[in-house]
Length: 327
Ligand code: DGY
Image (cartoon, rainbow, N blue to C red):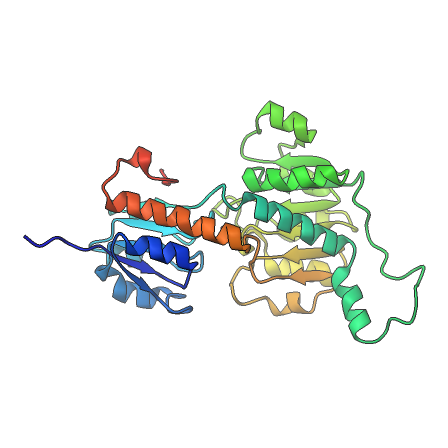
């Protein structure tokens, strides 16, 4: 009798602890970075695998899944899973999991860091110093926006939106938010957060707009020319969700025309490409999608994704598989 050894594909190098753990359950192939950035190679290779641990940059499309003859589970090394065609996976009986919770605090810290860096012009000021232009303390140099009593508008008040809100409250900011549904009353109370039913109204009336929503048909290009034009001239925009929530050319124009005062972007529509006009935009912080990048969090993300895989491979019931996405 031959017992099948499950074959697990990990699409990029991940923390060693996770790979070692997976090796207890099957044969593990870790692909070099960049191997599966587009669907072609995955379409070719996927038939050989029982489980896929993929990155948010791995396009797990309907075409890929149609070739996945022995695949049982896709676990995304991320909380966002817009890179996976979940309906197609389910139609082939393939389970899909993501990694919520473990990255909440890292992302909350990071959003707060972006806001501080942007509102106090860290990037420009440091460049000025490095260029040898710092000739002494200046009363009018690099004046920024103080956070106390300013309004932070959050679109997407899930775990990460809330963790940013808690931090911003500690800095004395007022919190307004838009979400598919209202958050629990006790959390609203703790955060002294006001629910705004219309995201456009929220954008018009805040000093900082933060995007913390998933990317889907409703949120694609939610921040467009009209929304940007309705924002306050001194307003700042922060995006750690997904690039395509913003129409990037509209944002680049708004920044160049000073329609809004600045933006901090961790994510881009065509990652890793960055819109060329964003690269030259004033008061714009551009970071390479690192909101969850701490040692602790990346290891926890990996372990959670790996546990979803091993639970499926062991034939556990759905209720015992961590973070299965159901639709
Ligand atoms: C995720 O996990 O979806 C985030 O993009 C991390 O930054």
